[in-house]
Each structure stands twice: as C-alpha cells, then as structure tokens.
Image: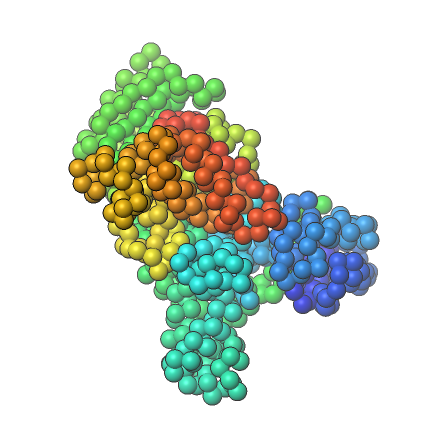
Length: 310
Length: 310
C-alpha cells in the first residue's frame, strides 16, 4: 500500500492506494493552512489515520507549486509558507517512510496516464484548468518531469506579448485568458458592456460575477453565457494549439475544476482547435477528452510515482 | 556504415557515417529541385556515390517539413512537390535499403544530443534559427518525435495573438518575430525610421536590407545594428522562455544558420532569458550554448536515427 497526498492552497487530500490496482482504499481531508512545520504535522496525522490496519511502504506528495527534484518547494503562490521548506525530507523524517514529491499537475498527469483518460496514449497532454492552469505531458510513454522537476508550467506561457499585464508581472500569459479566473473576467466584461443581463441579475454588483455564474447560466441555456463561454473555449484552444505544435500529442486530456463543466467544454475546445491549428488539413486531429479521475488525480498520481520508486 | 541525407528547400546534403563513432567518411551535395520522382532519383545517385567502396545498411532521411511516422511528407512550404509523396518508401524501393524519415530539426536534435552540444543533458531543447524556426527536444534522454512525427514545430507557436499576421495566416507566431527573416525585417523597420543609417548606406533601397546586412554591421560594431540585434535576441528569448516553462530543459542549444553569428547571439539570448523568465530567482538558469555540428546536424542525425532501428 502507498499513501498519496495532494496539498493545495486551502486543503490537503490523502488517499491510501493499492498500487497494483489503483484502488483507493481509504481517504482523508484536512486544511493545509499554517507554516511548513504545521503542515508536516497535519500530513503526518493524515498518514497515521490512513495507515490504520495497513502498512504503507511509501508516500507520494503532490504540491501546488514548483517542487524541485530533490524535494524542495521553490515557488508556490498558493502555499507561500512552504517555499524553501524541505517538506519532503521533513515528512519522511516524521513518518519514517520514503517520500516522493512532485508538482500536483505532474502527478495528476501520471494518474490519468495509468488509470484514467490517458490510458493507451504514449504521447498525450493533460491540461488542468482551475484557478490557474497547470499541465503535464507523457512522451514516449514516460512522464515529463523536466530537468529540475518544473515541467508543465504552461499557465505562464506567453500567448499575447502585447496583451494585458497579469498578476505574475508577465504580459499576456495563457493563464490570464484561459483559467477559471479568466472565465469570470470574461463574464464581468460582458456584463459591463451590457452583453450579459442574466449575469447582472444574479449579483449585487458586477465585480461579484464569477466563473460560477457564467457556468450556471451556460447550463440553463442562456445565449449570452454561451457566447462568453465560446470565447473562453477559443482562448483555451489557443494555448493547447501551441502545445500541439511543440509536442504533437495524439490526445489532450482536460482536467482541473473546470472539467466539471463537461461536454460543452470538451466540444468547445475541440471546435476551436480545428479552427486555430495550423495545417489542420495535413495532420490528424488530436482526440480531446475529459479527465476521468477528477480531484483525486494528483493524490493518486503521487501515490503511483512513490510506488514506482519504492 | 549508414547514409544520412538532409533535403532542404534548395539543396540536399548526403553523408556516409560510421554510427559507432559518428565519423563522417564521405559527403555529397546536390540540388533538391524537381518533382518527388526526380528528387528520389537525385538521392539515389547520391547514395550510389557515397556507397563507393562501402556497404551501407540503412539510410536516414531528414526533410524540411512535416514527415509522418510512416514516412509521408504531409506539409512542406519549402518542398511543395514532396507533399503527400511517399519519399521514404520510394527511396527504399530504388536503393534496396531500409529508409527512416524524420523532420530535419528533429534529426538535428538527435545529432546534437549524441555527438554535439547536447551531450550529457537528459533534458534539452534544440532551437534552429534559420529562414524559419525549427526545434527538437530530448526528454528523459529520449528524442521527442511526437505521436505523428510532428513535434518541434515551434515556429508556429503563437506568442502575440493580437500581433501581426504571418505568411502562415496565423497572428503573431514566434517565427514572425525571431527567424532570420524577422531579423531582416527589424533592420528594414529601423532603417525606415531613420535608426539605421549604416544599413541604408549598404543597399540601393531599404527593401533590399536583409539579416545579412544587420549581422555584417553588428560584427563591425555599428551601434544601431547592436540595438536591432538586441531587440531580436529578446524575441528569440521570448519563445525559448515558453519552451522552458513547458519542458524545463537544463540546456538550450542554439543552431541553424543564424548560429553562425556566434557568441553575440548566445549571450544576447542568455541575457534576455534572465529578464523574461518568470521566477528566474527560484529556478536554476538553463545553460545556453551554441550548436556544434553546424549544417551537418540534420544529415548526421538522420543517419543516427536509421542506425538505431537498423
């Protein structure tokens, strides 16, 4: 048995996983708040809880941030207390188990590859659309981790160098246009321009309009929400088109919180890839599919990565 | 012995290669003009010539275009007669030897990986700056070919979606800003704006100003040429920064015709990567080095690829 942990900006998810079958035997959830030391204590408690009646042999730890190959968190806007903290070594010392650290999207990619929507594809891209955008790649059947462990930071790929400034300081990164935050902004822009009256009706003031309102109205068939969402799908496809040009995967797996939107997102991205991809007539269209493992992907993938090396 | 061929828009280069040592035992050059049939006849003549006194066991064929894994040229602005022509099968039928086809930049990447500036790096990016931009990647020590054989088409990566239209029909692809053609355009723009008098002096009319004039004046220390070239290096670095975010290589190898500029190009790109790369303080800077194999890279790499499977 292996334990997989997924530490996000607010919550930590823990799974006890049978690496042979991928079966999730037990699960636990905790707040991820606090200092590095406090987080390690929280995670150790989760490990104890998950281990009851079992003897796990390793821990995989997925983290929302840049995790170096030697297990240090180098950069994490969502977990600032963890930066430069040796979370992997500390957790290993406290639990007495080997710990393998990885970026959460990288871990999620491996889970989808082995047990989810990436099965059978030796070259695929996983794109996790949430508050920001993360990604991971499988090439020649192998997970792409990068020389330092930092592969997949596609949200920071600049797609509009003369475009607006993002909170990262960059101009026009993909994340500005195609994350969950971006969908909310598109809704507010449409509302402010008088193109989204149903959205305006849902909120006290336009600045409270979020991606959730857009999605809710999309589901109820509101035409304005559909137009806003179509624009969003084009922006998602724009960045994916770049990834297709660079890595030529046969399949694109769309995950992250926005994947809950389901078929409208999948179909919208699929349509815009056909419009935007250069030489679309000369190359097989990639399969566009939804992720299968939902919010378990990162913890499950971390467990599989730990299982590979334990 | 293996034969490596590199077919570009105007010329074809042939090498007889000892795959054990990478030694280039013989070389030949021909025009690549004509129909698919004519080109295969030309290549067969080169193969005969190179084979004299040796018994090559396979042929590697690098081509400036999209080459599918099954050996068809799917797309090639520089070799339009070759599109949808089964060049690999035809050459194999004529010569009686197994033939392995690949994109020229992909083949060049493998040559630099095994015998050139990529040696010892398990994750690196090769960026070939010429008339356009090609690239290739080694990940986990393996060459990235892509699901269909089309990986590395980085010139078509959009970096400025609200930018100018390129000949490809895309808006703001990297190639528009950072190819040899782009360097010429930057020179002409500066000349037209009165910021490049030494360039104007070299030509009858500004529209004849090319990248060669910019490079010549750069070498002679012209301050205006240096400013133009600095702008160019920033554009090169902008696209490379995206590749670093996506794949996290430890090394970037700069090749293609523009690599003849040498250290000013290497140093300029290196400087701008430091400026543009997000979180540069949190991650090791990639090594930026010049390619070592020059215009032999594609033919040599094609030979190595053919040797791997023969």
